[in-house]
Image (tube, rainbow, N blue to C red):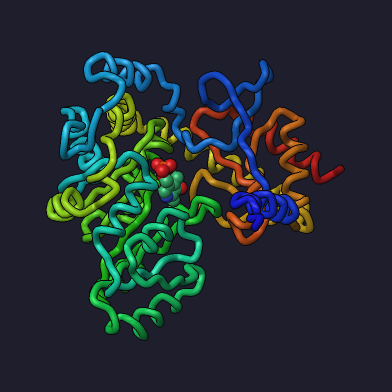
Length: 395
Ligand SMILES: *Cc1c(COP(=O)(O)O)cnc(C)c1O
């Protein structure tokens, strides 16, 4: 008897991915990250970074990582509950709770693991999660890992979530509304005050993912919850150390009892190695910079306002080519006709020394150029992007 090679299906899978124009691979950049990045000695303007405040290469953040390695070593050697816990982890958690103005916080090894951990801990098979249809992949995977039922709603429909709660709240033990705060592939914000009101009315928990808002939104950089003035409401706030904070890791901030519960029940915190000293040290220095240098956030806001105006003009002048999605954040998306078009525009920008992400299905429902602004972009760099986009339209 001959048996087919058990891995042959990979060839078929890959060819299906290619046929759908879904195939992706890494682009290599060298050197320190910033508003410009280098490839083979050539400089590119960087409009694809989550390093909104330019802290990933900040000398103080780097130095803090080096000092943490010198003091605590490269690896943390074990999980937090065994040999992996260092004073720097607790200092970081206290600093994050201070930034978020919550009773406590807990750090995970990534934002992805934080969402999987918190959802597996707070809901199970008798429970329901209502999630925005555009939620990040790790919120969806977290629900799957928890065994809870998932129903999706569309935030642009003001009554859908209320109707779902009305129809289903009483069939489940616990219900959690889970949402990105800044939608990572769109740039708009969740309607947090309305979500919190519904949660109160129906007795639900709220889990908000502040990945793209931490350090960015709110006067103090605490995020979307601060932006909407909802800091006094009870909810579960998750975020990452790897975007505006320029390091690596994730956090959950909330009540002391929530954090204590997660230390005992979140599998992706209990059974994984503690965040490395370097990552913890870098994030701690970044939180301090977010606190002490509000001018960085102001610079970012100025850049956002400027680019928004330029992109609005560009989209208005070429309505058949670009449609600018609504945004209240440093993330801007120009929707284009199809996958082939977005890939072509991405390459055309790259040829002009501009790196922007061409995002397409299955990541998002429609193809779009996704542009992220940093505090450290100069006006002339933003103008170069706008000019290139305008020229592209003329071609
Ligand atoms: C990036 C991101 C995460 C994951 O955070 P990492 O720290 O990169 O793992 C979670 N949620 C959202 C909305 C994100 O954009």
